[in-house]
Amino acid sequence: MISSVQLPLHGKRILVTAPRTYAARLSEQLINQGALPILMPTIETCVLENFAQLDIALQQIDTFDWIAFTSRNGIDAFFQRLESLGLNHRVLKNCRLSAIGKDAERLAAFGVEVDLIPQQPSPQGMIAELAQIPNIQGKKILVPVPEVVGVPEPDVIPNFVIGLKNLGMSVTRVPTYLTRCLDKSFYEVELNLICQGKVDVIAFSSAAEVASFLQMFTAKADYQQCVIACFGPYTAANANKLGVNVSIIAQDYSSFAGFAEAIASFFATKK
Image 1 (tube, helix red, strand yellow):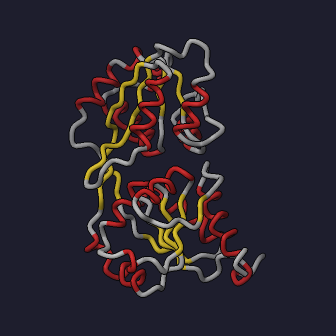
Image 2 (image 1 turned 90 degrees about the vertical axis):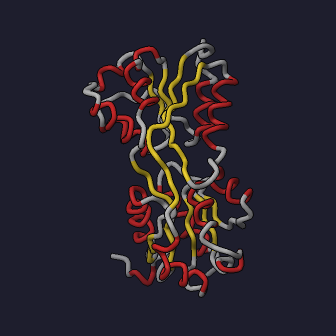
């Protein structure tokens, strides 16, 4: 058994801004590397206030050729609503399904077959592989996405929809769950630790987390002593657009294990 002192992130305090549904999984991987995770979700995911659009799509689900899931939250919310409407997952038998990275395992847990898992685990990777499918033009695709409240919507989903339309697909974007900012009043202790330079790394897993985090500070100097880590190039690109200097970008962003390893590798090179 390896002593915790020998682990690459021994004693490093890493702030996890992911929603609680994701934070536990990321924290587990960080602990495996010796880190001390500090959970400070800057956004939360919850059920929609209005299911009208989603219900219409689900009741007409057999008219779609494809369903493209871009997050685990989207998968969970989609199947929960399907069950609430009394619809069995067999209504999806005429649809081909796509999911990103480990999210495909979540789809499989619902007893449905995953037809496309892009090698590049991102919406853009999904577009690239859909483009290789003969006669994809004109196919109808349903895109379950979050409704974002409190911050401007990151460009990942809008760009995904544009990319699908550029393939000639008929795209139906439907809100499936809610993503909203959390108030900084919840986090007086955590924010003080950041301002005092007692947090080594801030780990962002989505652009919405970054935008909400920035609303909690009045000056960049408050968090500039922290190393910024992002779960993949798309989150990093959006962080850079918002004026955040990113030092760590996970190249393997199919799972949180790759994110934790990227952070560990960064500090290993500093020794």
